[in-house]
Amino acid sequence: MNISLVSIITILVLLLGGCAQQPKIDKSIETPIVDNSYKIYPQGFTDEIEKEYGIFAKRTALALVETMNEAKDLDDMGKMEKVNDFFNAFPYQSDEKIWGISDYWATRLEFIGKGKGDCEDYVIAKYFTLKELGVQTSKLFMTYAKSLRLKTSHIVLSYYETEHSIPLIMDNYNYKILPANVRTDLVPIYSFSGDDLFQAKQVQIGKMIPASTRQTRAWDELVIKR
Image 1 (cartoon, helix red, strand yellow):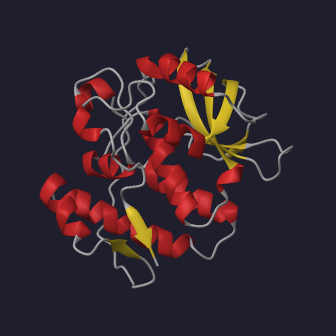
Image 2: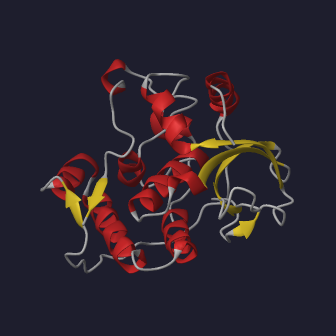
C-alpha cells in the first residue's frame, strides 16, 4: 500500500475541487466534565482556543478530551466508533465558504475552531485522534475514492486490521463504520499512508498551505497527552 511522491501530488491535484455538500446535521456538543487522565498541552491551550475561536470551540475541545477518556481503554473498533461519532457531529461546509478558497486542508485545531469542514478535514481529525489513542498508524490509510451517489471525488479514513484485510471505512457521508465491500457507493482509487501524506504536505506539496505564515504549521497542533 505504499505510494510514490508523484502519486501523492496527483491525489492533491484531484482533490482540489473538494467534496460534495452533504445534508446539514443538527447535533449539539454538551459541555463535558473532564477528568485528569488526558490534558490539553500546552497549559492554557483551551484559553487560547476560546480567544481565537470562542467559547463553543473551547467546549468542543474539552468534549474531545472527554471522548478520548471514554475511548482510551477500548479496543480499536471501540476507539474508532467513539472518534467517528464525535467528529461526524460536525456539520459539513465547503472550503470556499469557510476559508474563501477552493481547497484548504485544515488542521484538527482549525476544524474544531471552525466547528465545520469538508471531507479531508474529518479524515485529518479522526486520523490524529486515533493515532493519539494508540491505534497503529500502519493500520490507518487515507483512501481517495469516487462517490457514485454524489458523483464527486471523496476521501475517507480506512482501517486495515491486517495487511490483507478488507478495510473498515470511516466516512462523513455514511456514519456507520462498514467494510469496504459493503460500501458499494464508493469506488476506491488508491490508499496511502497518513504519515507519508502529512510529511509531503508539510513541505508544501499541493495547495494545502495557502499562505506563507502556515508553511511550518504542525498537523497535530492540538496535542492531547496523558
